[in-house]
Image (cartoon, rainbow over all chains, first blue to last red; front, side, top):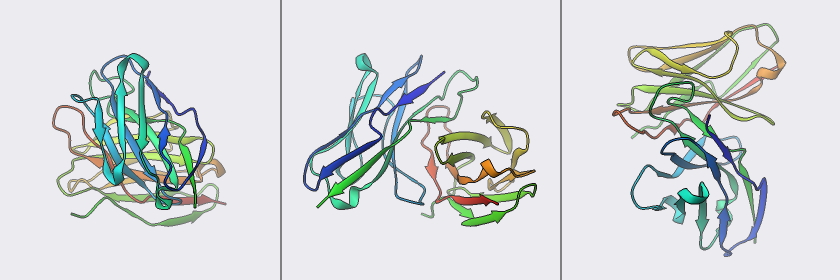
Length: 118
Length: 114
């Protein structure tokens, strides 16, 4: 079964500082990986995704993530955080082959709440 | 392009009642997914419909059910509501092309069970 771990429940950074949110996954086949962001009481907005190819993927709002198969990680980064980035961030892994109970669904990590200090 | 829409925004029910939540996918998307986001339990997969058929369901009791209509919109029904069903219910849609696909989420329906 697939699983996702986001080790940091809450991260606080100052505006303008760099950011890295950690994500580790467990999946037996080629993982399809996603980062979503959720503002309070809202739905999920897709930041970026990795299906194949270049392991460094660029997303919206200046975010990027790097897929490292050897470490089973897909960490999200941003060089300079803005106050509007304060939200909850979710890493997810998707299964799109082979059928079974995981087929078609996204499995999410527990989320990381980002607070930005002015 | 219009995104995924959900209705109602908020829904208040009492224990034992039934709730019906609705979702309209992005135009051209044939798959609809339902997730539950309950406090302390995170985002849990509920159901997946594609081309009118249920393709997969998560670890939820049978009182959670749904359907997909010919126009690809979907309904989630929760029967015999319990207090722990209080949650944000998120709908997502995607277009399947035989490989990995991206799920785009709606704003959610907040269900409160009293």
